Amino acid sequence: MTEKEVLASWVELDGCYNFRDLGGYRTSDGRRFRTGLVFRSDGLQLLSEADLQKLRDEIGLGAVIDLRSSLEVSEAGCGGIIDQATLYPVPLFPEAGGQSREALENFKMPSDMGDLYYLMLVAAQQPIVEVVRLLADFETPAVFHCAAGKDRTGVISALLLSLLGVPDETIILDYAFSRQNIDLINARLGSSKTYQKLMHDLPEGAYDADPACMKKFLAKLRESFGSAEGWAEQSGLDAAIRESLAARLLE
Image (tube, rainbow, N blue to C red; front, top):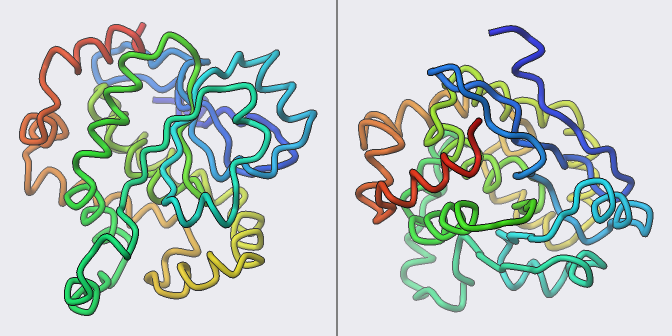
């Protein structure tokens, strides 16, 4: 694998800092993830008019999967992207109001981001399955995003790439690529009262994209489920959907 094959393809935009093509990566059997079909990103609510035109005219972006909670959406907004692409809200976690007070009081935050990512995989099983199903069905370029574009988005990116047969080393490098703009991402989140509180409650690694965290997540995934396919089978993501996903996204 060459360095060129593992570098992400940025989409330079004024209003967000982690918008990139998830395609281009090679699989273990020599196939390649098609470019221009699936993108990953941080929040899109601050996209400029020039950004929106670029996404419309150059990428043809037609679908946006929003992984944020309704609280995040209500406070941060969605921006102008909702006027030119179909929005699919798929929050990975329910609002605090939908959980019992006892459950919230007894919740213990994992000590590092690798453990937190594994918790996401287990606790947000059905929303993650829904994202994969959507990506298998779309006939238009799509993006999925959260706030920073590296944690919730990173878990789904890792799972998707693994299901398609992309090697772990590439998945880890893709995750760590968020480090390129991490200071800009953190500065924007830090300027929001909503994310000041959320980030403060997360493990220290939330301010980074340490490859060791993704490596740990992938190891725990395989320890518990054998493989991404094993997780998919247990989650109700059957072989037919996975085959549709590969048929659409691999060349």
